[in-house]
Amino acid sequence: MIAARLAKQAMEHEEGMNHLWVRFELPRAGSIKDVRLTVDLPQGVHRSPNLNGYPETDCGAILLGDSPEGHDVFLELYTEEAAACGRADIGIAVESKDGETEVVAVQSICISLELKAEDDTEEWPIDEEVVERVKSLQCRLQDRAAEKAREFVILPPIVRQRSRDFADWEKKYRIDYSFNHR
Amino acid sequence: MNGYTAKQITELLQQDEPGINLRTVRYYTQIGIVPPLELAGNKRVYTDKHLHYFRAVLTLSKTGETLAAIQERLKDLPLDEIRRIGESMDMYRPERVLENETVRISDDVYITVGPQTPGELKRKIIAAVSDVMKGENRL
Image 1 (cartoon, chains in turn cyan, yellow):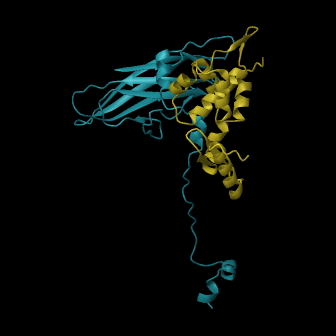
Image 2 (tube, rainbow over the protein chains, first blue to last red):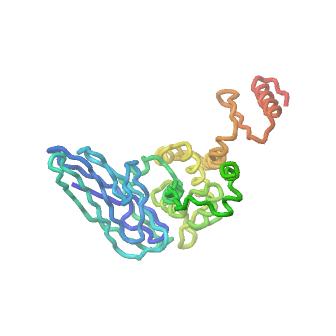
Image 3 (tube, each protein chain N blue to C red):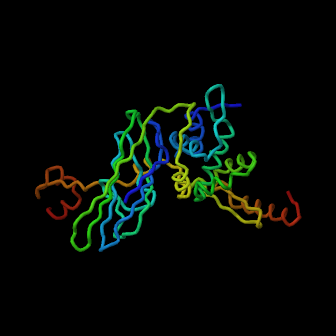
């Protein structure tokens, strides 16, 4: 069974922040492996890498290993440029594989998030339990999105095809040419 | 009373900590990490008090504390203390931690010297403060 709660039911459609707490349990019968969580966010809503430190694939699937134990996963959601206001759905799916039959089981739910304009006069109702959980996680005020962008980028080597013959200018300037070919 | 919008207070905080952004300022206000905003007319505004709180939170966050622990530590402190904690933020910049040398004179007195201070002067400062601590005031 999956349960998901947001720190704020509504968040700013521009420069807003929120947290999503996903909790689920898997059937304990049989062996389970390759548990993964995927979160499908509305257009314009982004998320940082999960706050629990689980590995993630390039496509954003969170890899939770082979444990059938209950899992709690926290995600920081944010908006940057103005996203469309209104209600939108967050899709959450948990996949797990049966260790013997290799059959993949999928559970999924959908929760609703409202995106709206910031208003100086308005209070933003919060879910205290989610917020208390978030506060007890390690504090990092840096912009995680910007931090991610600063990570190393591995560039593939550039391989140029060339013939074995030296061009005239190469013969002239190549250091070993004059010794070997004089 | 100086009144700031979320954007203005973010810009002030970014002078000390470039990693902070508008959404973090808004969110930390909403979840009660800083005191509730004050009313100026029909608008809720940030004041210098909030600036001190944010600086103190940023400083303590560099020590690895959780937000819950930071909130607990700041809960009963007077504003002067909050301001003092915030003013020490500069000491926790990575470059400061890497370059500065902190010498423990006693359980309660530490001297931090930056890389621009020549070795001889550094020794004199440490000796002078040590002497003061021993009751032999040579300053």
